[in-house]
Each structure stands twice: as C-alpha cells, then as structure tokens.
Image (cartoon, rainbow, N blue to C red; front, side):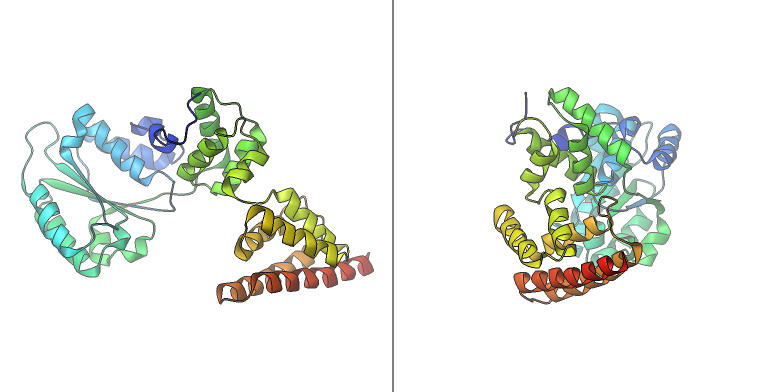
Amino acid sequence: MSTAISELLWAEKYRPKSLKEMVNQEEIVKRLMKFVEEKNMPHMLFAGPPGTGKTTAALALAHDLYGEDWRRYVLELNASDERGIAVIRSKVKEFARSKLPGEVPFKIVILDEADNMTADAQQALRRIMEMFVETTRFILIANYASKIIDPIQSRCAAFRFTQLKREDVVARLKWICEQEKVLCQLDGLEAIYEIGGGDLRKAINILQAAASLGEVTVSNVYKVVGLAHPKEVREILNLAFAGRFIEARDRLRELMVTYGLSGIDVLKQMHREIFSADLKIPEDMRVIIADHIGEIQFRLVEGADDEIQLTALLARLSILGKKIQDKA
C-alpha cells in the first residue's frame, strides 16, 4: 500500500492528464474541447477558488493540443515567484517571439497566480499579448479576477471555475482509495470534503495523510488535520445551552489543549455546528448566535485573548439556553 507521505503527493500523482479526465467543470471542459478540435484558441483567463482545476485545465489543454511532447511548446511560470516586469520583458518576451511550424502554429504561456503580478508587469504583459498574438497565446490563472487590470481582462476569454460538488469530490477520493488499495469509510471521505470545502487538491492531500494512519475514518481525518471532531464541539455547545457553563468551559479548555487549537479554529468549528441539522435549536436563536460568533471572531483577529473571548461566548450561549428553556 503506497501511503508513505515521502512519495509523490497524490494530488500531483492523480492530476488529470487530459480534459476528458477532469472532475466536474463540465461546461468549461466542453468549451476547451472545442478549442482543441479547432487547433486554435484565444488568450484566456481562468478564475476561481483554489483546488477547483484551473492549473489542471490549462496543462490538460496543452497536452490535448500538442500531444505527449507538449512541454516543448509551453512556458509555465508562477507569477507569485516571478512577478516583476523584468521577467515579463525577458523570459516571456523571448519565448513569445518565435513562431512554431506545424499543425498548431502557436505556443502557450501559462501564468499561474497572475493576480499576484505587479501593476507594471501587468502593463508590460498587456503589450506583449498584443504584439505576439500570432505566435503565442496566454492563459492567466487567478483566484481573484478583479486583481487583473481591465485591459488584460478585455483581451481574454474568461472562464469562471466553481467549487466542486460533494458527490464528485467523494467519488474521486473513493477512486483514488481503490487505486492505492486503501481502506476507507464513506463518512470519512465526506468529512474530508467538509474540511476541504470543495478544494480537491486539499482533499487529496488530507486523504493521503489520513491513509498513513490506516483506514480512512472520520476520527483519523480530524486527527491528521488537527481539528476537533464535530461531535466534541457539539457537546460543548449543548452543555452551554443546558446551563452547565463550568463543565462546558472545562471541556473547551481540554479540547484546545488536546488538539492544539487556536481560538479562531474553535470558533470556525462552532460556526459550522450552529448551522448543522444535528444541533436542535430554534431558527431565531441561530441568528443571535451567529451574530455573537461574528463579534468574538472580530475581537480575536484584533488580538484579544482566546480563552477569555471563548469563555464569554459560552456565557452568552448559557444565557440564550435559559431563554430557550423558558420559552419551551
């Protein structure tokens, strides 16, 4: 069973090589496949959350256009490392100026994390995109399209990537488990999806880490990511609602010490549980609690003490719990 973390990360090992292998994003894949058929494409801007397939789509498109020898025709740069005007004027311009013989008469420059490029570099890039459009096409990849200047956006066909669906992520993780001969439980894979939040790269890396402990179960998943089990967070909330404030505070302290959690980590998990169907509280109370959590989160970000602020939150929940009981 190849579960050693020292091996090639599964996120890279199982990256789709062709557009046809991509997970979800059917509409985008359909549009890109049309470019492959026509052996032509415009400059493109791929935007969306991390781990949704932007870089994979760009590399798979290049593979489908040029075949197995595709790396000869592609310049891939990470703009967060090489984001200055000097790189654009030297490396990119040098690559862009020469023409290719053959069925596909252009090369591709992939600029990953293009939203980290400086304003000067973007202005230089805009001019190069204009000058060398016959010989080179650009694929810009960004988490935030708004950080790309308007003149570049207007030169590109925009592709908006969305977070992946639960069923698609879980199915992909299950397939990887079968390939690696790893035992897994469905609720463990669903827990990975919840933690990853639609980021497939993060989900696969969590899967590899959990597999190193043996079977992929809910408890193993939360153990490797350093988060408390949702059931434990729910118990603390229920103790506070029941008016058992001191017991809830002691459990909170124990949880933070056991898992080494920060106040923000605990607060995020509490926020998730407040809107969970497993927590039986009236709808109007969820609204009030969400407001309290938002206020505490702001205080923590501003530098307030974790324990004092979370204890204050439990105190408020105890007061709300009493109101719930009085209403009942």
